[in-house]
Length: 283
Ligand code: G3H
Ligand code: ZN
Image 1 (cartoon, rainbow, N blue to C red):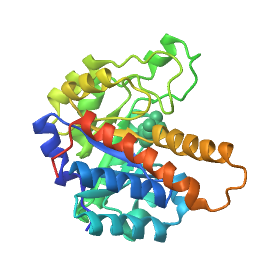
Image 2 (tube, protein in one colour; image 1 turned 120 degrees about the vertical axis):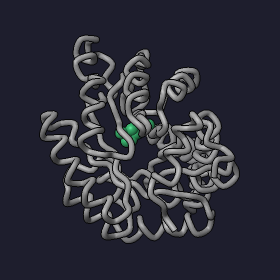
Image 3 (cartoon, helix red, strand yellow; image 1 turned 135 degrees about the vertical axis):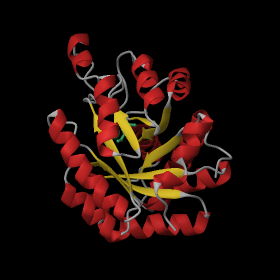
């Protein structure tokens, strides 16, 4: 069965490794992620954004995740990614999600606490884990000035109080990464991660894991990151593989001919991330 993130996050925090959240966009993503994790004996999190949920449909999403858990025997959490309301979180929990993120980062601080607290209360009553978010995680634009980027970073004292008041199971804080592939240089604020991670008992979550150099990921994990989200790198690997097959042969019509290499490409990305995060042999 699908498990709450509390099945593996405390172990990750204590053992200084991170569990990957790999976003699921369709069946091939789910298969690639699960196969890589099975070979590496790693726990993992299926991240499902509201957009992906709309694309796949609730029933297929839950059924695919349950099938992956059953087939693999691994601790797998099915996690709503960047949930925007209490209602969508509850809808996912009712349908079988074992974990949810409530992203109240666009609300004022006190409001974010209040809303996150409500989700935590309801989710915990049902054995479902919750991730909260503080600060603003930027997009792909590389023309944002440093000042603007700094303004969006999470403040350690606020993050600590946010944890104390909400009781989330892990906390995403803006520390310099951005969603999407990076075009400019990445600057991760390890000092913020260290300060927050040393003062709360749950792991810090790093969003925007795609395109971050390996050495920076290792340092972030050592600083206290226990969950890392990756989506775009798999999307790019998937699409590049498909593009390559189609460019070579204009007569291909069987989807399996291009989805098989796409799935293999994603599997290798996930395998590398699992080893980099140190979650291999932790299932
Ligand atoms: O919540 C999802 C992640 O933060 C994905 O970020 O697409 O840059 O890997 P990414
Ligand atoms: Zn994210």
